[in-house]
Amino acid sequence: MTLLEALATAVGSGHVVTDASMLASYETDWTGRFTGRALAAVRPRDTAQVAAVVRACADAGQPICIQGGNTGLVGGSVPVDGSIVLSLARLDAIGEVDTVAGQVTVGAGVTLARLQQHVRPLGYDVGVDFAARESCTVGGMAATNAGGERVLRYGTMRAQVLGVEAVLADGTVVSRLHGLPKDNTGYDVVSLMVGAEGTLGVLTALRLRLVPLLPARTVALVAVDDTAAAVGLVRQAREQLPSLEAAEVFFLDGVNLVRRHTALPAPFADEHPAFVLLECAGRHDPTDDLLALLESATEVRDATVASDVRGRHTLWQYREAHTESINAEGVPVKLDVAVPLRSLADFVAQLPDAIPVGRLVLFGHVNEGNLHVNVLDARDEAEAVTDAVLKLVASYGGSISAEHGVGRAKQAWLGLSRSAEEIAVMRALKDALDPNGLLNPGVLLPPA
Image (cartoon, rainbow, N blue to C red; front, side, top):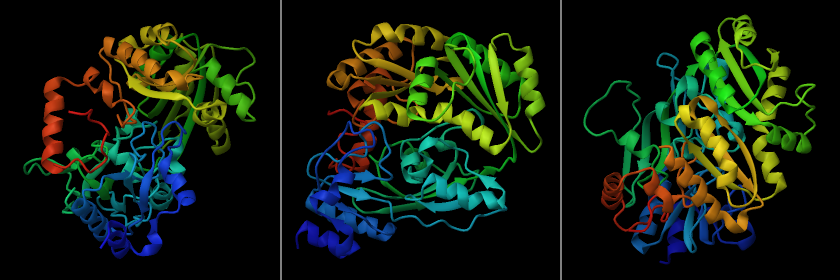
């Protein structure tokens, strides 16, 4: 039996995609920068079928590329030439919400938006949120330890995951979905799989903690002078606003770009060089507390506040429309980095001179010192741009990946953020769980 026949036996012939025109959507990432060629795309419906697919590939020595919503930005979900794309989109079951514990078990292919819609009528919400919610999947979010806009209050995806079910490289299924908040029995396989970018196992199901749905929300868009002022404003907001849930930073060139590709008006009568978006949420209206902060903070040059749904959405669009507006201009070099908050202003000031070519557009999550560095008109110089930015990040003691993962895009620079000893530990784990290197080859770890 050939490999393709074995895969068809495992999932049904209708879910083994080999036609070139149908494979195209699996072979290129969302940005259009990363691409590869797959032997086939396979679409299992449950953990048992995933295990059968992985066993068949292991028997054939066939590399596997694991793919969720294919919204990744570091090339980690794009196949190396000739690999099998293992699409988890059909693993989309959502279990009954445990309203006593505030938990739910979901398939890896469930999108974030669908999960939000499922739990919110019951008074719960998901602790992680970001603009790609309609297409990103929970499995991919866990595999990359995604962050987003609510890390300030709830932490990254790792803080939301209480249990996992995963298929190892030989087809063995490891399942721990009980969701006990206290369980220190030996090694933590759950935390090991979260953030591993699919290199140690295929996540098929997750047990997630939920957070309370907070009905009273207020958003402020604040004009400030520069990055230092943004950091100072957010420091005061953390101290004065227990309801603070999000703090985003972006700049005038980004706002002008967004306005070119949307119907948004100028946010203020006068132009300002930088902006902070704050969102507060609680069981009681946080508007007065937010207004008091804005009145007392010396960094504020202008501000607009909205507490109604439409107004909040409009203010968020100035921030969330950045990604689609950047992509509308061309294929960017996208780098997700973090530096210590005390160094953020200096890092932003040095970036334009550090980048050899291209147009720089910045935005990010200011409280965590996390910036999304986008460089347009630089695709042919992607490696030089990446090298310059990541070395500057390392000079400040920062991280080359804050929330998107390392993928294939940044694995050559892993040593800037992890010591040789740490990388050796990672290799030992990879060799133990995937000795033939079949799961997501080329992702995270550079060649030995």
